Structures are given as structure tokens and as C-alpha cells.
Image (cartoon, rainbow, N blue to C red; front, side):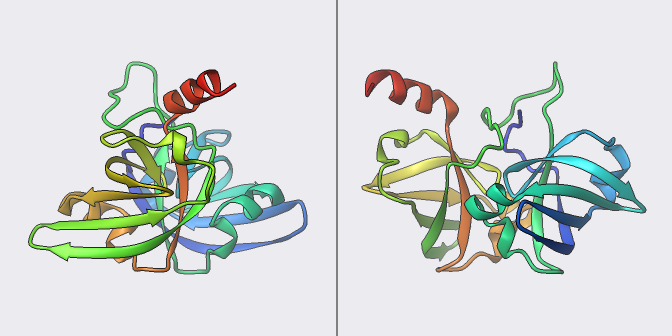
Length: 195
């Protein structure tokens, strides 16, 4: 379980594999220093298990299914990724409950920059509309964000300067893909209400 409050960014050293298991290596000095083998770490919002670490590099095994259903398979060496270690019991929950289980991949339709504010419009596949509400929560690439506006199968989120600086969102542009995890509470409510 995570909160969507990114603790740092890492840089992809490499991703390789074929078929059922891939190897992902990320340079992340700060996260590596406090992590242990077996820990859960969210990489761009995807919950992965730390399988090895060495001199500021953390390594993960990634299932082929995860590669197909997220943006991880499109990562290239030197790409930046958002990182968050698992929520510790008694720790603050500054964002919202994020599981690290990606629902779908969305595409940024528009990036608007005004004085002191950046907003992103993100389009997601049809069928997920019932899982978003204005002023509700959504995790984009693992970042807990408040939904400013809902329009069919798209949401608009506003990003404060701190979040732009501390995450990969500052470099995003129209056409880029993001991992989306809808609010788990909303998912359970929708399942109950629509089943």
C-alpha cells in the first residue's frame, strides 16, 4: 500500500527480458539506501518487489503481464521514474490509498501552463467513467492527484509547482502515456452499486 506521495525520482539503467519475466534496474541512491530485498516499491505507480540492490541501483523482476498493461515496457535507459516506498504502519497518509495495481494506461491530451499552474487533461479507455468524480482522487504514474474536472472518459488535474519539480510530471507533454490507478474506495463502491 502506498500514498501517492512520491519520495524521489530514479533513472532507468536498463530493462530487458522476453516473455514472462523482465529485469528492470533503476539508479536511485536515496531509495536504495533505505530499502531491503523483498520491499515493495512503486515505480511510476506500479507496485514491484525489490529483488537486488547494489551501489545506489535497485533491481526488480517484472512480469510480462505487467509490461503489457502498464507503461513500464516503454521505459528506456536514462528515463526518469517516480519512486515511493510502501506505507509504514503509523506513517502519515498525505495523499490517498494507492495499491500500486494499475487499472489502465491513459494518454495526456492537453497540457496547459498558466502563471503558477499547470493542468493536464488525461484521456482513459471507455468503461472507467464511473470510477472518477470531481474533487476525488486519482493516481497518475503513482502520484496522488485531485481531479479538478471530469468530462466523459477524461479528467483534468492541476499540478502545483512542487509536484512538477519532484516528479516526472514536469516533463510530460501531450501524447505521453501515464499509468492510471483509480481510487480504491470508488472501485469498491462502483462494484457494489453496479453489480
